[in-house]
Amino acid sequence: MTAPISVLLPLRSATPFLGEALASLQAQTFNEWRAVLCPVGAAATALTAPAAAADPRFRVGPAAATEAAALARAADAIDSEYLCVLDPDDALAPAALAELHAALAARPDAGMAYSRHVLVDAGGRMLGPGPLCELPYSPEALLLDWMTGPLRLLRTAAYRRAGGHTDAHPDAIDYDLCLRLSETCAVVHVAQPLYLRRIHADAPEVARWAEGIEARYAAFVAAVRRRGLGARYDTALQVDSWHILQPLPAQ
Image (cartoon, rainbow, N blue to C red; front, top):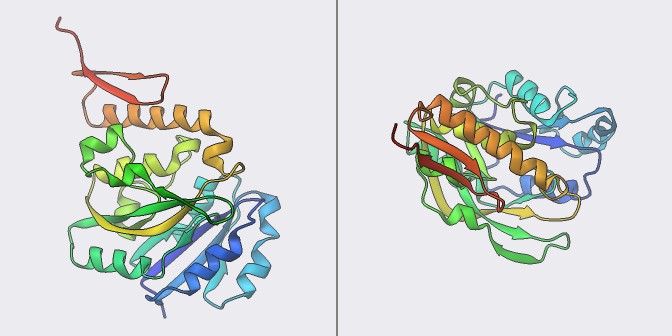
């Protein structure tokens, strides 16, 4: 029987917190889910067997050279109504799937629901709330501030309609996807902090900090062009990584 929610976990070669991530998934109050372990690169494939053996609800998806490709291939194969991505460094609050599922069920027009999150360090010490998720959402605000991450439940149909994960901006695959979703469906913000986002030295967003800034800017510029704003606005990337959208000078 198909579960309503498919949870995709991209497995990189080093996943020291994978056990905690899987345990948080098994502790969900909403238990109608299935997980797909998505190995990124050949070195990650060896991690899937012991993890998949831990629970019959875990299965292994096709390996791919990049995270975007691994997630896209797994998403192509699912037949669940909803999907979400759980990073193996992170953890879900027990009510995470239940709250996001209820939010989307109450809004048939919405294709994505996202929650607030809390930052934690490698030892699990709380560092405070993720600041961007405190901001009010709008498709326009998302151009300048990425407030829709990292926990998002998506209608699978909306995910596919928006084009899914792609390698167009390899260090900003989630931001790029959120921008495209914001252009094609309504989005719901769940106010509860339902996700623990782990910050540590080997996390991709830390190890590839500069690359991430450049990739998010490129995704922003692509979204500006898709939305037909290029004729009226200029774009720039400041040293502190803020995106700038300003009117073009009068001709």
